Amino acid sequence: MKKKKKKKKKKKKKEKKEKKKEKKEKKKEKKEKKKEKKGEKGEEGEEGEEGEEGEEGEKGEKGEKKEKKEKKEKKEKKEKKEKKEKEKKKEKKEKKKKKKKKKKKKKKKKKKKKKKKKKKKKKKKKKKKKKKKKNYDKTLSSRLRSELKTAL
Image 1: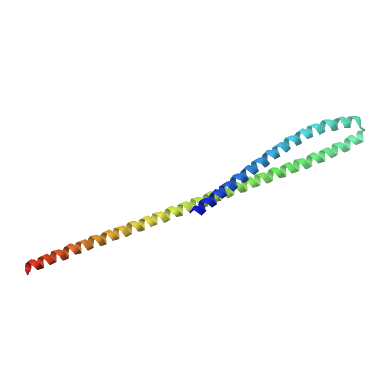
Image 2 (image 1 turned 30 degrees about the vertical axis):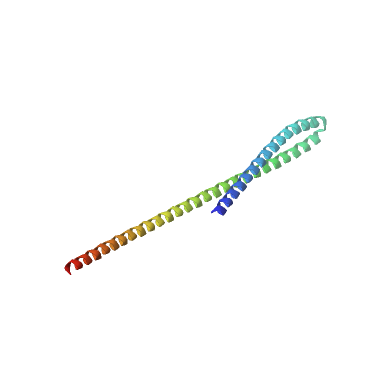
């Protein structure tokens, strides 16, 4: 029992640690996203100035490069989002499964307890009946003995 409790405590601690780690990672991602957004804004301004200074052909090439870069970033963002959602769904499913398992276990335990209680009650009843019969037999035999004595 003590071992089980210790194991449970250890498991809880581990889960807490993992949650903390995930939270930290999320925060880091958010910070990076913010940085990227800021960087994009800055790049746009710089590229625009360079384009105006440079020739017309150069401007076209830079625009294409920029579009490609943006497309790539958009794709990566989308993939990241999908991955995150998939993980969230998986976690939710696992949580549900765990809950169901716990409920089932609890139900089984309750059933077992009930059965045990019923068995105990039956045993007690049987014992009581036996005792009653024994007492009755005792009184009967003593009565018979006393009657025999008086008859003699």
